[in-house]
Structures are given as structure tokens and as C-alpha cells.
Image (cartoon, rainbow over all chains, first blue to last red; front, side, top):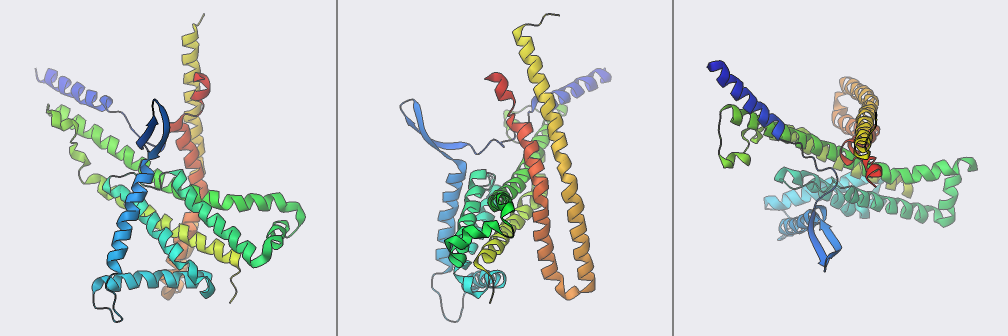
Length: 272
Length: 96
């Protein structure tokens, strides 16, 4: 009698195990808004773009608030915070690129803030902006444009072309390849790191769903609400999220701006 | 043994999936290199901190950047593995 009960409970638990399928969304961000022309699709706006504009608006409001009502001697905490932020990036750029490249400090701070918030927005349940090769690729392309601009500015266009033939003319193809590989590597590094974190989080979520279903089936709980509420998904993913989302998001954003500064400073000729 | 077209297609798909699985596993061998390299870099950073404790913050920052750069070859392997596992690029040839 009891054996039969145990067997039925076990088989119910096993059914819970095999019912859940792993859903990992690496194919790209989902389309949020699709503009149709009759039955044919004109264009669609992906989640990355929507999240990006949301972040732009939020950051704009935040920075407007931080920089409003500035005084010569700071009296409010928000002004101290804003000054610390500006001083941090000014010092970073001065250390890595030299004092003559200080006009790039706002750009570096912008890229860092955008990359950081874009990666960390996954904490709030959105899809990270940086889990989209188009997004990181755009930033890497901006870096590539800056590198090329400063190389041409400091050497002249002829000098820029001549730079490919150094030290000997034979290795020109390799030089061109390494020039192209720089932005590709930057884009793939950030995309790969954040997306691997996202995939691991998805797998953890799927596993915890399975675990919850197994427990629900074993306890013979059967409410329709339990299809949407999985008990083990409370709290446990947050611990893993500290490493996979938070740590790698911060490190990769920092690495991205450090590499940008290194390459651009190198292109501009860092002697002073 | 005679196979119908549907069976042959199923067998072909199964072979493609098997190859993808094996290929993804092989691609992740690329993780060995960055593992060794990063371990070496962290070890050297700890040596530096032990010798010069005042250089701790700059040594740590440089080590993290070096680790993140060294990681990129492993990340390429990971991307190849992910594409093989989840995007199924070769099954599209069979369906076309």
C-alpha cells in the first residue's frame, strides 16, 4: 500500500522533471515593437533599443538632478557624489591618456555609465543591452573611429597609411588584420562575457523551475498559481547573480573603457 | 534495408546534432588556456602584493584588466560552443 503510494509520488515527481524544457534566449533580443505595412513587416524595434532609450532617459533625469543647484562649496550630498564621479573619470583619463586628451573624459564616462547600467539592468528582469552583439559592436565601432581619427590627426593621412607598412612592407596584411581585430575582439569580449552569464542564469532558473515542480508534484500540490510561482526561484538566483551579472558587468565595462583609453591614447601619441 | 525520405532526413538531422554536440564540447577546450593564463597572472599579482603591499590597488586593477583580456580567447571558444548548441547553424542546410 505504502509502496504503491511512494511509486506514484515518485513518478509524479519525475513527470515534473521532464515537463519543463530549457528556454535560453541566445538567438537575440525579442522584437518589442513591429511596424507593419499591410501584411509585410517594415521594421521592428528590439528590446535592446527600448531598454537603451529607457536608460538614456533615466540617466538624463538622474544627471539633471545631480547637477542641479550647484554651489562653489558643496553643501549637499548629491553634489559631492557628482563631483566625485567627474573627478574619478578626469583622473582616470589623465593617468591613462595624458592631460592633452582630457576632452575625451566625458565620452569615456558616458560609455562606462551606459555599459554598466546596460549590463546591470538584467537585475531588474530586463534583458541586458550588452547581450546583443549590435550594441557592443556599435561601441567598438566608435572606438575604432576614434583610433583612426587620432592616428590620422597625429600622423597625417599619408603617415596613417604608411603606418601599416611598418616595420617591413611584407607584413602589411597582418597589420591590417590586427587593426580590424581590435574592435571585433572588444565587441566579442563584452558580448561573450555578459551573454555567458545570462545563459548560466537562464539554466539556473530552468533548473530551479524543475526543482520546484518536482517538490510540488511530490507534495501533490496542484494550484494553477503554482505554474507561475516557483518557490526555489526566490533568493537563490540572487547569490549567483552577484558573480555572473554584477561582477562581470562591472569588470567588463571597466575593461572596455580601459582598452579604449589605451588604444586611443596610443593612436594619439602619448608623450608629454 | 530501405529507408523512406523522412527516415533519411531524420537520420541526417540526428547526425548533424551529434556533430554539433561533439563540436561544442571540443570548442570549450579553449577554456583551458585562459584558465592557466589567468591563474599565472593572479599568482604573479599576489607575489607583487606580498613584496610591495603599498602597490595593492594598482596591482589588483591591472590584474583584473589582464585577466579580462586573457579571457577573450576562451570567450571565443564559448561563443562557438553556444552558437553550435543553441543556434543550430547546420540544420538550416538540411531544411532548405
